[in-house]
Length: 257
Picture (tube, rainbow, N blue to C red):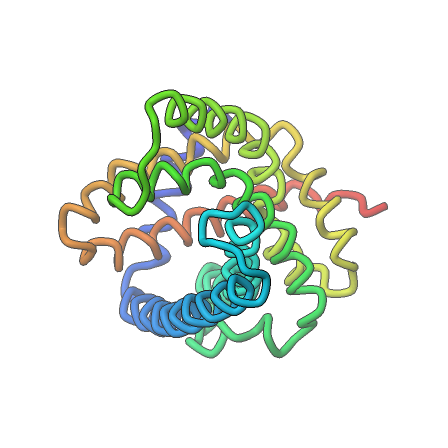
């Protein structure tokens, strides 16, 4: 089936599945948002204290390479923790997709079941996302007025961002199914799940990328609605990606080596 046809079928099916279920989804995302906000605030404050302590102890200034590198450590570790919620989101939408009842408490699944494996999978996916967007951080700081960069350095960062995307975006797409697979194959180790995701996504990355890209206009509309529309758009996308996983695994379960 052509990608355009599959995309239309999956998105229409997602609309049907989500009919009457948006209240539960919005409640889940509000809960997730509050948890992430609290963790982010805590990580920012902890990171500030950590960096100031190092600067005082080692007599370094805020521009030193060591401080700049270490300033990413705590936010990254907290990103790994918050990314564990993705396992719960996959369970939440899989329950809806398969006709079961989904609960907000599903979001905490990864913290109470196989936490070690959940953290390893979260670490792998967070590393890809972190390095994929790393060159964009200084550019964003410049746009926000918190940093000054020369034109040549901006061009170098933009070029680096394009290179990182070309290298790491396919890997991110290849690992996109790890949390779904962790739910379907609970006996597999984190390494086996990562390899299985690479296997099932072989030759499918472009297809998934086009499906994800098709939501970009909706996200732009969501931003223009002061973020209110995102409460409907994000669950709609999540369900589409969940149905994509179910369709991906439907022909036959891949042979697990």
